[in-house]
Image (cartoon, rainbow, N blue to C red; front, side):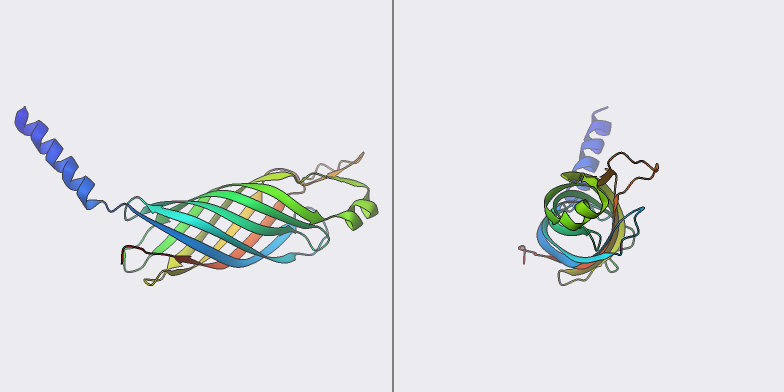
Length: 188
């Protein structure tokens, strides 16, 4: 019995020492192509910029909390948010080819927005103090800290409420994000 317990403890110690938990802070910057669904508005081209901390918990998984400034909405409605995001990154290939899939939730808080012309023209109630979104995408990490990433983000909370009129369609944020990330490695 002692040999089994000692063997299990030795195996657990070996696995623990072999798993390389690392933390790397970073910055991200990119392009947003945003739209409010079920409207006839053109896309809004905007930017996103933020900071993150990647906690790599093994060779195949990393947890990455993020704080990001986002320009969303549509051409007629400028919505600017601060987003708190939890990105789950799954690496599928080996260390030499660090390709990953990223998924997660995002809680977006409205900062400001230009809505006067839309409000007066369509007699609407604009509801975008906060938005909850889900996103998915993929990326690639270069060995020198730089990476590229593409995501699709879709809101769950309706951002436009037509007063006295309902067509059964929900108006939600939908965004394509294309950008770059840079991770700082202070271990070198």
